[in-house]
Image 1 (cartoon, rainbow, N blue to C red):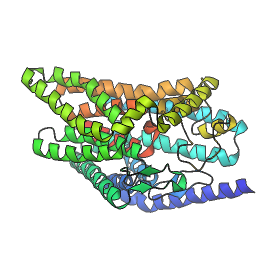
Image 2 (image 1 turned 90 degrees about the vertical axis):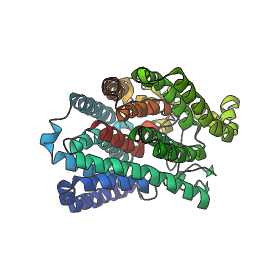
Image 3 (image 1 turned 90 degrees about the horizontal axis):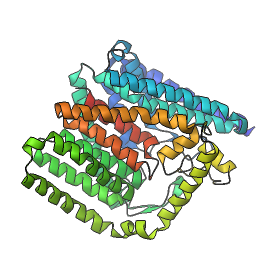
Image 4 (image 1 turned 180 degrees about the horizontal axis):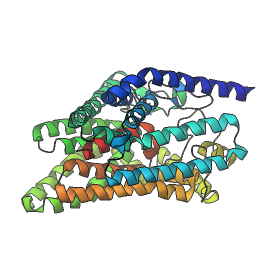
Length: 430
């Protein structure tokens, strides 16, 4: 009886979402910029609005609706999709192959999953595929339409600074998260509307990289905006975001120096290094207790180490075919690792690559990583050839996420994937 009720509840949610899409669809097809605006609004809404799924900590988000609208707007321009650059055709092919493989692994595992468990897993599989296909969809919408791309780039900056401002307001008015509703309790940390300081730190880091690239020739505005975002990033107290950002900047510094070598003197390089150290001093002082926790293994580090150890056990047991996408929580329950599905961290390990390995096996992990590595290569190639700062920001954003996702499950977080898709599409469609 419970399964029938759960199934009917989920079907009613899909029918409601379908009705909303059918109402908005004519406007979305006629005015694609509307779907792009909805995507930005959904990022700002964050986790404040959701339709819960039975027995799950997650649920339907405004971003799910907005992402579907973007795909529909792109599909209405199928002829434009066919004219995209080779890199996006290869990306789309890899994502389709990953989608088919991960669907295959999910179909292999219904033997130990009930209907109530398999339906949410299918829903999250659909969400991931929609989010991954946003990049070619957005690129097609911006192709040969500079006015639309300009609007999208402005909306992107508005979203970044709106989220940053909301974070400051939240910290002043609502500084502590109690832990109700399955969220981890956080005290005096900037979480904005995403209700998680680590994911918010990831957003701000990506936003900082984009702002530095988008306004590379406007020093005053760049410094003021970057300082604002950096302060917000520090206030998240997210070690994973800061560490990943520092490593990313160090890794890509040679690419900047090589491309700009004729214009850079030893004095300029020394000045840049000095300024970089001065920028790192405030967060190092402010977060000294949390940074020392990395050496002394505080409670958070212990919990993450235990979660990773459990994930490695699951990966070893399901190395090739995995347990099925988003069936991680059920496999972990079967292995005696978790029991509470209402918490928001139950669906994966604190490591995106390990989560994909567990759920889709090694073939799935290779198929997932391949398109991102190709985009990094193409972006660096274009940077060295054209010197466009935005394409370097694309490479930096993906490198950052590959590092950051070793500490938290950021590469599979819906809002992060949407934000990354917006950054990549706006930066490449020129």
